[in-house]
Image (cartoon, rainbow, N blue to C red; front, side, top):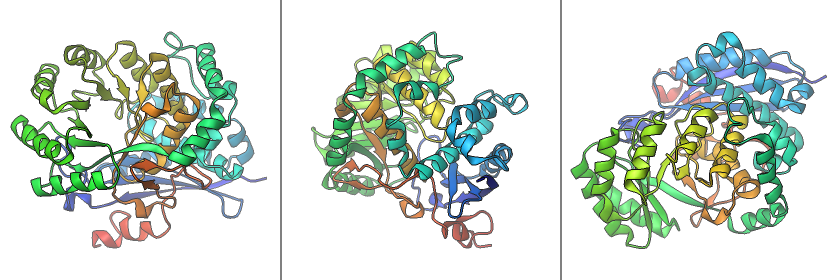
Length: 431
């Protein structure tokens, strides 16, 4: 009998604040970090991996939470876990004492996400498939069964979700063939970090065009005059035909967001991301109505599908973003993708960070294959930082994500990374 023998959690931190990679109006000096979980098993060579992305201080708190949750799985028989991951998901999410610390939000819920993503990583490795393929080859009824419908069925019920999946089923193989050939559109945030100089912004915008990207995103929100100046530099560099999006990273009040977006009208924005507090679904709806037809994009900080449901019900997002480690893992992410389909809203995931591109691409591909009405409208964020530390780094060529081919969820870091970047004793931290 194969069982889980240990749950090891490592506090990984990368000193990206030294070069201001990842800097924005809300996060001026992030150190990209991961509370990294490895579920060891008694089967030689089989380890399940998951992580929670953070930006430095507090990663030790997140790591402690992951350890508390993952320890519940140690000693468990593996086949039972992998055959019914929904039962494991419900057990971890509805643990009443740990749930008190949420519910369904914060470090404990993200810790559940790390554990569940590690369980799915094990399942995919056992099956010899990448996660997108495992999810896409489930029967519609099996996909529906992954979702906890307790708080969602007033907007989307299981029968409606199954109908959406059934409608797409006949296109599955052709969509996979198209994605194998053409990939999925990527957009890049790499030129637009707020701490970059004007020269670096202009140079990276031009480089992005050369690399095949047709959408570029800039960080804004610290100073309107400076934002307008930087947007002018970017628009001149990329020309009128390349899409330009912005991300305010929650910095504005509702009235300030409406005023700022009006001031940016000359730049013909593809979307405006996180204009106000991520939990303010009513505020997002107010902004969206006021600035129409400029699309509002948000969702990377939504803690759970219940908040996503409310946002979509109120029309607060014309683009729903998902983040692979902000919510409770695979089951929450599948729910959010289905909710977006019910609302007629495209899912364009948040990535970047460290490991987020590798992890969330699987959900973007699953959506494009099994759920989305029109895959040609979809895209996925890309930044060019830290991919060398992942066991299965993303492949992005000519501005397109390529389908992952290796088994697993894309959540494993390379073995040597911890020696350099484990905090505080890794060699990169000088202790």
